[in-house]
Length: 217
Image (cartoon, rainbow, N blue to C red; front, side, top):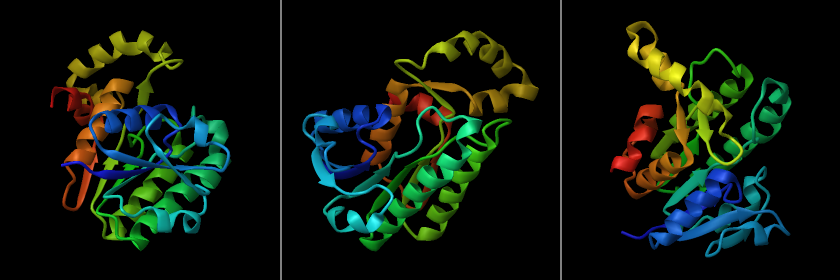
C-alpha cells in the first residue's frame, strides 16, 4: 500500500537516502525544509516550508501523511556538543512529536541512539528524554537505535570491525558489542523503509541487530 510520508531531516545523509528510496518505491514524500533550502531536497520530494524547532510552523502541513519521520539532529555528535543537543536535538524532537500528536499521525518514527553506552552521555540523555515523551504520547511509534552509521566520510570505524567480531563471540561482551555495533547506510535505509511500510501497534524498538537484518526482508 502506497503511503504519504512526512520527513523532518530529508536533506541530511540518512534522510536524503530514505526519501529517495521511498519515492523509488512509489510513496509520496513531503519534507520539512527551511526557507531557501528547497533545492537541497532529493528529486521528487514535496517541500514544506517551516522551522524545525517550531512545530506550529509545520503542524498543519503534516496531513495527509500517514507517517512522520523525525531525523533532525546535530551531525557528527561529540561530547563537546552537549549544549547543541539540548537546543537542537531535544527541541526538534519535542516539537515534531507535539505536531504529530496534534494531527494524530498514524505512525511516528524516531531516530534515537543505542543505549546504555560508556560514552556520549549528554547525547544519549537527550534522546532517551524524547523516547520517554513518545512513550507517553499515545501514538504508534518506531524508535530506531543505531550506534554509528557507516557511510561516505564515516568509514574510519571499519578499522574496529575485527575487534567487534571477537567481542561478539565472547559471552560476557556479546550483548554490548551487538548493541553498540556499526550499521551501514544501506542497512539504515532498509530498516527505516521496512518500519514505515510495516507500522506497529504501540511502541516498537529497533536495535542494531534488527537494523542489520533489514536487508534480508
